[in-house]
Length: 143
Image (cartoon, rainbow, N blue to C red; front, side, top):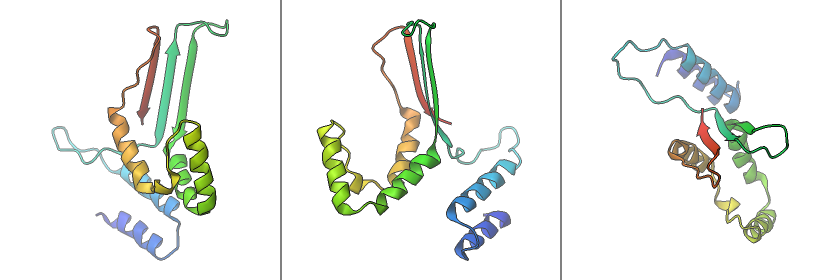
C-alpha cells in the first residue's frame, strides 16, 4: 500500500473524512499512478463507476426515425440505495417484499447487503441480453 493511500485510510479512521470522500480520494490516487510499462503485469481492473444500458433499434416507433436509448446509471447510486435499505423498518420491508413478489419481482430486500451489489457488478462482465427483435441491439455493461 502506498503512503498516500495509507494517509487517506488514516483520515477515514480518525473521522476527518467520510467513506465516500475516502473512496473519491483513492480513485483519484489510482488514476494518477503511472501506467505500467509494456509487457508488465497489470493490477486488478479499475472499479467500474457506471452501469450502461444502450438500445438501438431500426424500428420507427414514434415516427421520428430509429429508436435509440442510452442510459448511464452511477453505480454509487446503487451502492447508496443498498445502504439505505438498512434504514427501512422491518415491518415496512416485509410489506415491500410482499408487493414485489405479487408484482413478479421475487427479491427479498432483507437479504440485500452491500457485498451483494459488488458481486453483481463483478458478474455484469458476463451478462448476455437476448432481444426478440432481430433489428434491435441491446448492450448492458459496466464502465
